[in-house]
Length: 115
Length: 115
Image (cartoon, rainbow over all chains, first blue to last red; front, side):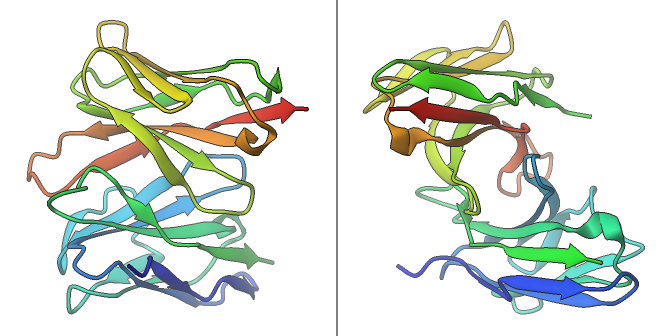
């Protein structure tokens, strides 16, 4: 079974620029998550999708961050404009709704550096 | 704010010894508790989860849960240098819309196993 795919793996931008990340979850996984992990901290949930609907975006800075999962499969996370404090690893994860539903499977992450 | 607290470490243990990691959480309604391992530069991977009070063993790992004290721990027996990593405690909270599982992560404990 293929894992969660993310791209790009690394991105360096200047503050006030825009950036977008892409995630393709494990086939058949209905739930998709975006996490932000700042160096030395645990992952923080930004947004959670169930199919193509948002079920939790309470910690998403909506003035600059947006995310979509239009067809209930892959997803994009956008930051516009970026700030220095957005430098982090952005992790995408997915989980099924049955079977191993307790487990979240993480992608390799995208490391963002904002200069 | 639902919190999960861990000692950041590093926890230094000699090879072959037992590593003991602790985690406390604030939400009494939490249902399930997870331990993830994260190697430097990699994404988290699930080690085990527990949802009933008591001990749960899986190979060299034992998770212990005490809901009354809001405390969960992880023991690593016969520690190996390959166990050197950051261990993340995560707590599952009930979502009123019953849409999958929401995890809140602690900051992680860095473990160093010295040969």
